[in-house]
Length: 71
Image (cartoon, rainbow, N blue to C red):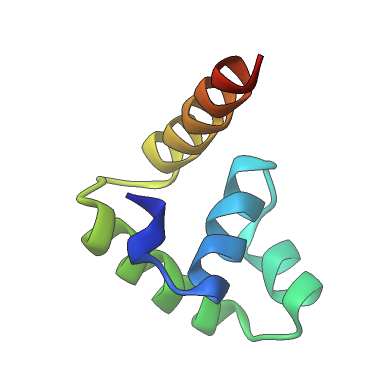
């Protein structure tokens, strides 16, 4: 599912999963907070997710599942 996102959208989604705010994400990637908001809106739409918390949980669970599969 994450493969439907652009590289930047994946980076923003991962930053959300790390608990960063929009302002912190903007600073990390050298983009405006408004651009972060637009990326998040696109991410929520592409992944059919209602918001930030569900996105973060999805990323963490996907990451954990990948780690378990590798063991």
